[in-house]
Image (cartoon, rainbow, N blue to C red; front, side, top):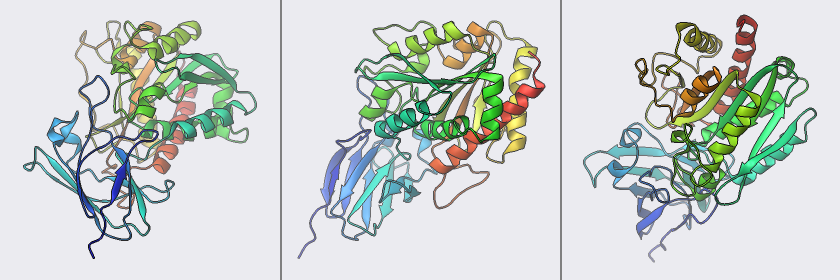
Length: 381
């Protein structure tokens, strides 16, 4: 008797896939665009009816996605319990069907979940915010509301005079950013953690763990509910297009900003790196050196971080001022930076089982905070 076809569905928090065809345990798939947008890259779906068979999942038309260079060398994330996320055998054929990725995996159980990176659900986000807000010394602020009516959550703590902002998931498909935030908040809200204790003494910390909850829930890669790329809205955010950025920037105007880290993920570069604010109108070597000093400390503290690979630096006067890091550095004179983590793996320290993973995101967060402690001690500004 012929085995029945598998079932594939994505009608859940951050789900996103289009099923072209299914034949037994094989399927042909395409990745839909974000709503009202040309961006496509994020996928997250469930396969059931597997019954121990080898799954063969073929993603086609990948040259039409937002970052085709992200597919060579990439391995799809897979989980059977939605707690541990490993990597499935994955190959990419540039010549077939406008770029084709084939994922092969044999589940031990009847169900498996696949995603571009380990998802961070809105329910987990709500749990993270609630737990952190209940910690001693933490204040919750509702900064505003999204186009879909979700809240923009901010957690504040610390008694110091340095104004420090951490914010993540402007691009919602970069879920590693909120795993990083979970690790950071565990440090910052633990009364026994020495790194958290020093930062709370020296700083007033403002943490927005998810800047784009609408896009996160809708399964978008890069945009909000109306297809707007939030990290191109910082020069002139509006309530109609980008209420998320407007709310966060207004709160920054109220507090001022001394140090800011915008947490992201990069599709193509298999490394952790920082992008800075070179090219802003007020650039000075002294201002830039303060940022480079932080990078050197972080590189020394952890083998997960490096400075050899990354984005090209903007030439003087050519910075894109719609991007958060550039705008924050210019507007407030802040030491601002964008932390990028890989969708693939850290090629300098590879993990064949998981690649870059939620666990490693959380560990990197602690190293970033510890580097900030050291940087604050050396920085006299």
